[in-house]
Figure (cartoon, rainbow, N blue to C red):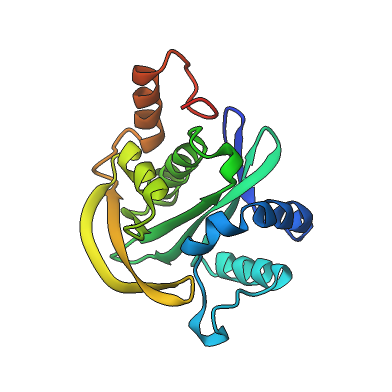
Length: 203
């Protein structure tokens, strides 16, 4: 599955992305570390790249996850992942993301989140999308604020992040909140605040 909006492209993570993934991660290690999920059973150490790709692919095939690479003008700049996919009478998922600091603040992640949200709500038939963010993560909080996600309160010690159980603020949208799609609303917001017609790379 590939999603495209202007110079922004979302596609599945592949084993051959190893070099680009490592290059971007190494350049952003200090910036990303405070917000990284860390499995407590391994003492906080994440799996290796190949193990991570195999795990994500297995979860995607089982319908529990949608892991995507964020490419800007053909260059690997981050990831956006829908996890915890639930079907039946719940039909929900949770979005997580990270971005290369060198392109942060240019509308890349808000646009990517809007694209994935629309794919989930309008394409897959989910009803609810959540984003859970540490209260200290100002950059991520700006993303959900820009996109109009609804604040729903605090979850105490919700996720194991950077070596410890951390509180998270929960934000959500349902399909009723964005009947015309979140991406369209995000485009309109960008157009109202900027002379540029494209949010990606300029917003």
